[in-house]
Length: 417
Ligand SMILES: [Zn+2]
Image (tube, rainbow, N blue to C red; front, side, top):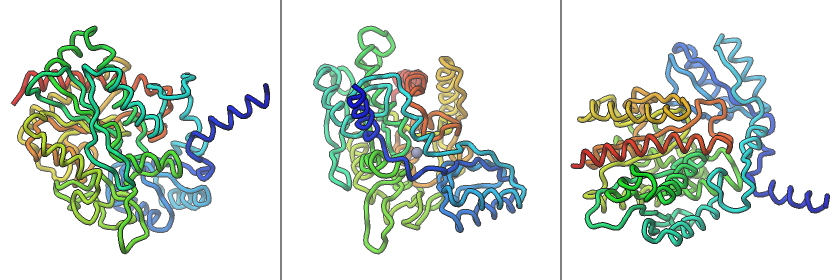
């Protein structure tokens, strides 16, 4: 019996990403008050291997803001010394990244295969896309919109009751590999759609009148890499001539002020915009699908983490979108809905002023294609766990987010254009 239990434990442990490498790594939150502090952060970034969590890279750090980043075990003392010498206020959000990484698997679910309240690896999600379509032929169909750099098919689920000329809402998850709560939401959304259709009046009406295109994971290669090699990977896994650095940031790779601000031309940066817009097979496939279905797609929702924010265009410029007032009041109503369930507080507004300037994002691009309702969700949390949100929070996070999405879908349905 003991031998059996030991074998089961080993089998379960080996299904999780390797975490030993992160032993003793810490995540800091630092208050950046002024330009001098900014210089200290830049010095840290150039002298040590710092992984920026929020904002996404050193180039986006601003005065009068906070910055979250992780530091390797061997550099922690030196980094803390430098912060203290220069009188930067800081706190340690995560004192041992390895422990936090292991602690995220705290689900009560005993399911061996797919579970909506656990993080599923790509193999499991891929099988689930087939299963959910097979089990709900009247509501869900699966197609392939392209293949990834490493050759994986990109599955898209179309969710809705068959009817001619329906308007549609496009939802994607998993742009950034390490934001695991994001794919969990896309799976949750499809489950709730099929589970409550015909039972719950609002969902039933939405699925009768709208189609939802759900892309469960955009950056599949990156997601696989976070399960097998490096839990903290963010970018795609493409390689190119002239550099040994791998991957580009898919959310800097769209033709919306491409690479002008808040993105890097350095292939080794975590916010590398790529050699040209849509250089990645994944972003090209997504953009092609939207271009080909522009007449039906009325809203674009892209799901990221973390920060608890609901953002709308623009992020590549401080200019406000034409329907700024409308987007603002829709965002306000959506975050109110979201908070009604568990009290989770979201901030909202145009990306550039609410989070930071960042060019080449898919929401700005979709908006400039003519999709009037384009939003980015930054799901839980606000940094306590960051990208390592425990599985025990999947359900609450997805439930509250679904309320916001349903509210927005209802609004879009009443304001077709
Ligand atoms: Zn992201």
